[in-house]
Amino acid sequence: MTDAMRFPFMDTIAGSITEFNRERRVFGLRTIDGRHFDVRLSDGMSAELLRNLDEPYADASEHVDDMLTPGRHLFAYGVFYPEGDGYNYEAKRLVFQGRRVGEYGFEKPDWWINQVNSLAGFYRKAQFGRGPIDYKEYRTNIRLGGEKADSHVQETDTISRMVYGMASAYLLTGNEEYLEVAEKGTGYLRDHMRFVDREADVVYWYHGIKVEGDYERKLFTSEFDDDYDAIPMYEQIYALAGPTQTFRVTGDPRIAADVDGTLRLFEKYFRDHSGGGYYSHIDPVLLSPHHDSLRFNRSRKNWNSVGDHAPAYLVNMLLATGEQRHAEMLERTFDTIVEHFPDYDASPFVNERFMADWSHDLGHTWQQNRAVVGHNLKIAWNLMRMYAQNPKSSYRDLAEKIAGIMPAVGSDQQRGGWYDVVERVRQPGQDWYRFAWHDRKAWWQQEQAILAYLILFGSIGGDANREQARQAAGFYNTFFLDHDEGAVYFNVLASGMPYLLGTERLKGSHSMSMYHSAELCYLAAVYTNLLITKQPLQLWFKPRPDAARTLRVAPDLLMPGRVRLAEVEIDDKPWESFDPVAMTVELPESEDSLTVRVQLTPND
Image 1 (cartoon, rainbow, N blue to C red):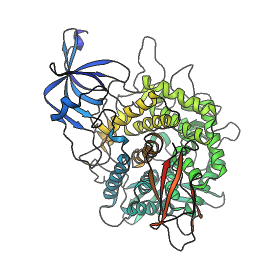
Image 2 (image 1 turned 45 degrees about the vertical axis):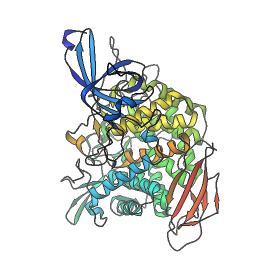
Image 3 (image 1 turned 90 degrees about the horizontal axis):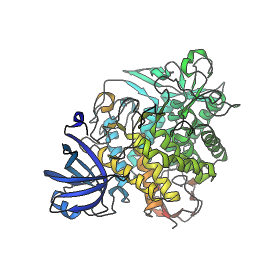
Image 4 (image 1 turned 90 degrees about the vertical axis):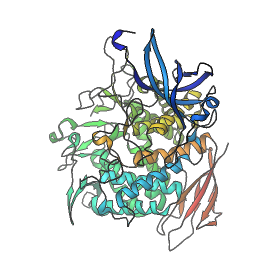
């Protein structure tokens, strides 16, 4: 250790206990990559159990000696003191992940259900108070405690993302108020943000509206630097996220018509029919991806334009309708990803940006030759969903390859959690892939890691997959939950402490709404209960009178034969007309919406 490094500092260590010496007040902690630390219990140290949103603080300080048993996973926060030829580490805070060895709070059957219920309550109150749900009051920017910022721009994507979260909360809880927020939000999007081009027979969505009293001004093109004065595909994609999840619940045929109209927009103006994939932007006048006004976005493709269809809306449309055309679009999308995104001769990270001919675009504004860690994990997660639908070995092989490579280059092997943006290539003499800007960790990238490793372990097993899933879920639930104000933090420092500056102190912004946090709750509940801990899961639906009379209730694209539909109730009465294997319910004709509760159970 050099003299320049001889100063004390506080930091986090995540790992499992190897031994505990009561006399010396020291226990051993092994990190996920196998390194060993001696952790000394300091005077005044606190210890606690992992707790969910809306759960009280659970002090474990008086039980530390009994809980420091080998194999238990915990997070330690303490001080590194430079002494001798190294450091002595003294813990100031311990967070145990469960009451016993092998127990993890986030693997309880109701953990993620309770969490999404708390999230939905936070955003409902933040946007509408305790009164009627009126989307004229919706604001994109929400402060840390839920107060609204002064901005009066209502962005289409952030409304859609909150609608997604509310629809997901209804699926897991059956709380009618959340469905009301979702349905009214979907209606508001249709009435205020949707443009129907009857001549071209397409639907597209405004960037948003600026509300000034009773007057609103439509914002047709994007307002953001990377996309300014253009129509970016990712905004059109995420405009569908909330309505599509609502469609899964209600079967509203108007939503299906909007999705179909937007799909025609994608096929007519964004899709590269000769070279494959979808262009990232079109100009607002000629609706061409090749116009000079697009500048650095001219004739470009990227992860968001090619891959984000799947998680944002396309998987959910397939689940809701079973239509082969959606399965074919998913297959085409993932074949494209498998063919063009891997670049393992040059980097352990996929390449995300391309020219029209699929040559690499390594000069794009902020991204350059950089990797978004979460996009790699998102690809692995969605490849495994697609593998369940269409078991091509290429899907599973790439998902497993990403899962095996990423921990060493994209995660924090000492503290836990996953980094943000890093350089894809190391320069001569460098041992570490450089951070593009910082070592902070964003909430949505933790989601991608949790879901990727949960579905990998739940589908094909592997101790490493389970360990990574637990490590990621442990870090997220230990450090991202805001127990004081509610909801989750945008970013934390590498140590896990909240980062609360600029837009990253907000709970609602252009980047953050309820989407990723609720998506995590919904799918973590599905994967954990049905694939891993083998617990039943209840879901709620509310099909309208004009919905299709076959209700599809499969919770996600899962490996065939793993889950079955065991029970159905309609309006609180048992219903026997269902297919347990196909997970479909034949609905009675009705003049009113029906409340359908289903129970799904693992087959093994």
